[in-house]
Image (cartoon, rainbow, N blue to C red; front, side, top):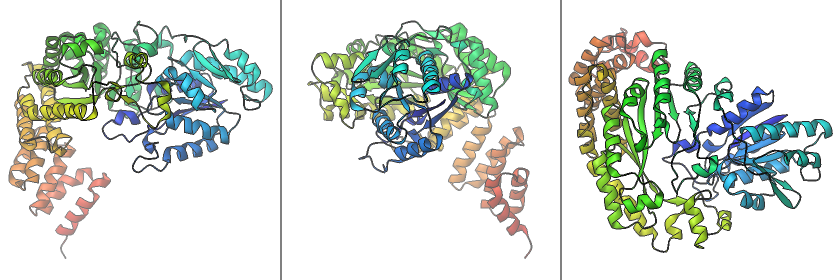
Length: 589
């Protein structure tokens, strides 16, 4: 029995949302569970293949072509798609193609989109056989084992373009699924949840990836989010710190150096987070990681261990600075709590990132100004501004249905989601777009001030980490995201100030290199080399500093000395051209 899991392509291009290109962690759990049972299972990620929208620029159905090739090669017995609202179109197109190529294949949808759009998907996709609702490990394992028994007995899963009758009988006994039974459908109710997450296999045994989760569920009930309904319980279940540490350690040994911990509220259990961080610190894994949390679950005592364990960023859903909007979104956290959390996180040398939503029910110019005022108080060093959209599984979508503002048939259109302004008679696109522009402009207008306001704990033991934090941030202004954004004023000078501030805390190779590269760009090679000399006095074997010094020397015509800085790293193919030029220039003709 061979099972292929598929992460479909989004409908529209992804420009600023790289997470959308990653395989959902749930697929790694599902595939690993089947592999542990002896099944043949793999994952096909179609997301990087490009948009599935025929009208999208550059679209040439690459995702569907890639899927077709894979299915013809692998010949899977079961194909399981992880479906969200943005990926449903590609999932249905692939399902139809699979039915043409392999008529006997069982086609299964799972994930948030399938959980909340079951009726629509069955109507719109004749090839679809089964939907796995919510958490899928137990339901999927039972489904695959039932299909195996039927195929071993009868040699087929389908009969006359329908699920084999004996398999239908088995499916009735599996909780948490909806399946097609001739012209009708049968819903077996709520899924069985995994009580102890540590009983799940380690996906790192079979796969290499960066996105992790310690827990399932969220204490919040945000009206724009489908998480509360998807998990089907208010109970937060967690892996033990030891389990997650083992997963991180195994992936680090495979070469993964940066992780994204995707819990809705990572810092909710202080003891568990502290224990995990202590294990990472003791193992000296040399990793970095980002986390997500809520401002009302930030305890200052865990921020130090988190930073020492490699945490460099925590993202928070601030959403709005206006109390009426927060109430509508069910995010009733007072602004002072938000500010206190951001101050604590930044003081620990962790970058605080803020998510804001605009275009909510009841939004006005005044509520947007409330959000701007709160943002100025927060001083975020990174922001994401989202126009409010809604989709099945959220309280806001149900509200729109009740008011008659939309209907499930709308998902027949080539749309990823429903912007709230399209539904709300009190809003229009021009106003909502203007609010987004105001928020973004306010952020960039105050960004330099936010940087200047950074106040770090005066803890000598944290000095190397503070230098690391400041130099990382500086790099975004000198060579990263902010350096490329015309809305950022004085980016290069901000970078210089941050690099210099980093060196006031501790000698940091990145800071020395960053300053040298700025002055190198300005053709001020003597000043660049002066910083490199200082850096190399602390880190004489640092490759980046040596290469930067070699480039400076080449620029002033000293190819002989430049070669001495490149030679220790001659095995690096990227330096081959530099070494060749230096040898040519220093070899007598």
